[in-house]
Image 1: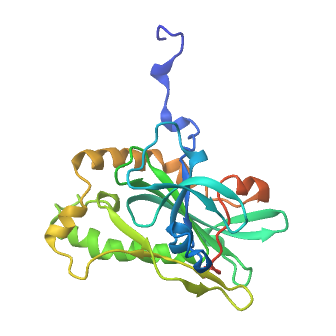
Image 2: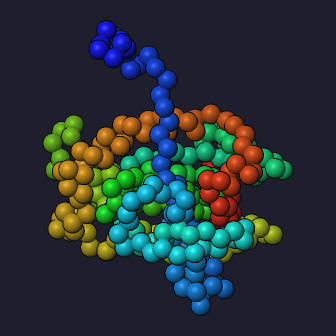
Image 3: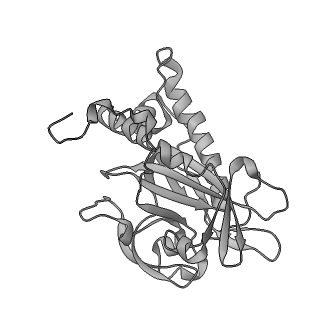
Length: 265
């Protein structure tokens, strides 16, 4: 027994329930053409991080602090970014269906055709210049688009950089900064459910040289730190591997609704 009176020396961490980490939650915001005069992400789209989710002293260099009006009519003070470079550490995905005042959630493998399920993707990401990771939420068509962006990034950047990697030692996806930005205003959704979206796009040059790959590399210290964040987020990923129901008011405390059609399996 230690001096504190607790038997820390016999504790097996594998025999304890994991605590789900809590991260600041941002979201992908679809720009609205009618707000062109306002400019910023309310017109162009981008990432919105409500100030209420941030701890005191949090810093996101290059982001803009502004009042955001969501499509629900709710207003909040938030940090916003049109173009942002992130290192995608881990992702989790689930389907959701509105059921009156409640929302039902299902893991990816529980998709049912014709059940009006929409995709909900969250990315645990390091942000260039910030000392803490954040979660970025993508819903509907934006979730589908971002998964395509991730695959494209892996193929063009990560796989290219790993061609000369030692056997068994490839760099992970989060070893590189991924530049993303909103695309043009486009319509999404079926008849009667259309909305205008500004989907996430990957900001890579046509010619990806070795020098460019090196410029995206996060560096040794960040690689060590991001690996720790990856390992700590295991319980966060697993938390979405089960079905559940959440009341609409509770869901609204975490993120505003952003439409964009149904993401198909």
